Length: 78
Image (tube, rainbow, N blue to C red):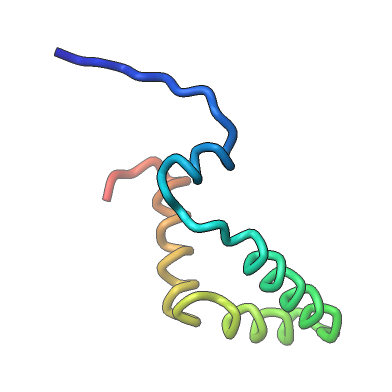
């Protein structure tokens, strides 16, 4: 038997229903910090170095994310 349930709610309502924490203030602080850091970059090399430091797990995380995106755009299965 297959049952499909469709729920019509906002992302905020879904977050509350699932008991997930509200991280909007932390996200705003992170975005503000990234924007301030980006304002001081004058070249592409500086921007790339900064993004590697800000990314979760540093360069390893960026490589994993790139691999994931490449796999997704190629249409191949893992």
